Image 1 (tube, protein in one colour):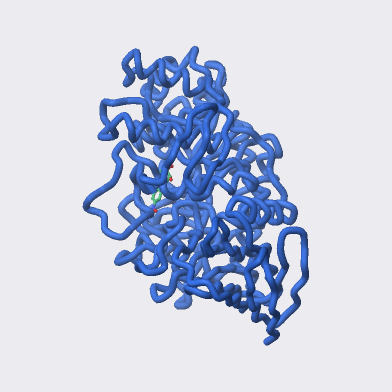
Image 2: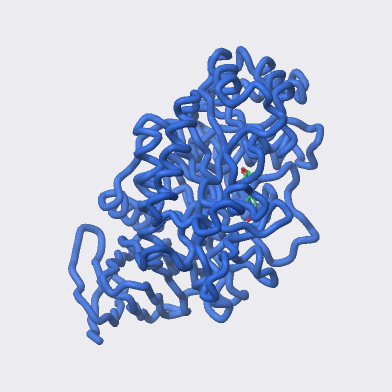
Length: 488
Ligand code: 9PG
């Protein structure tokens, strides 16, 4: 191992790595699958980045137990990277940082795929990866500076998709799976005249997860649904989880050979939801690739120009496939294939996406767990990935810097007081965060809102405040200062 002593913005560090170190604007590039950066400051806070949209993310005390999903292997598999999880260490995926005081942070961030992860000790950051060719960016500076520079370097290598979502109405956080033609039709009618750009039909339209054909609730079919939305003046958007299928789906039953398998040769469990486990498609197979291409070409032909692609991490799990390519590369090629099928002008919003491997392909990405019309779930212990306004906000506010990679979607905001436990302050915080993130969506049916709430919805859709970040959790929106410190 090579040992290199450097001074980064006044901070003395010692870098241990097998391979080369080079200087670039704003910091250093280090290559390797096992690197260690020692410094002499007793850091107390670590920035932990979770692997996918829903994974616990944010600044966390090094003297507390590590930020991760505890006591629930099913949720760990679904909402973080179970393969690299290590309860004995403070660690996360792709990028990490230590607060080294005086407003400065030491950042270590991967610039390559290969399951990069970052662990922290009080006086060191450790980078590990599955591939010795992984390049890292190392820098010290103000938090905003070093995260911005890191994000920029990744975008230079991975690209930046450039679609715009506009304002979105989604069916999920009001009707959940309980949707049908009549309900959606009424909701769309009520939306007319509101400055929404997109109407996004979420989970519930399909026969079953895995079989992407309409279920009984939509007897007129998908083309009619898309055209109903388009005629009302909105862009038609559809939720699909193309990497996964439930055991009962026709695809799982008729094509067991299409599934990723485990070491025993059985269909591999890729996660849990809908009261079940589910499987992942082996996207390295030519027949699966053709199936996915035809699926998305067909959906575009039916009139959809925006997709919320969900549970995407399942395409990046370790497992047995037809090739031995690294799981990050397998995932990347799968989403590139979907991008080719839908064309450059279709908006792709990723949910449950691995954050780094999605850069350059997705136009937008969810950056936190599901919001909910309540602040937190008191039943839940030590799981920051479950639904709730607190979890969603705490994660999302810590990932605003990812704007340089894709639009950051902090999830919907609520205006309704009915069917909600959120108070005015909770609702206001979500609205402010949506303006800061620049991604504005709601699921409130207009008919659930009183007149004052309808007014607030209209103002939200019309407003585009000037946003300036003042600190870790402080922002200026036009003349107003919004501080999330007490809520993170
Ligand atoms: C539809 C929903 C909505 C929502 C998505 C996603 O970690 N989990 O187990 C987990 C389950 C479901 C989930 C998120 C995480 O919700 O985020 O917006 O589209 O699917 O079923």
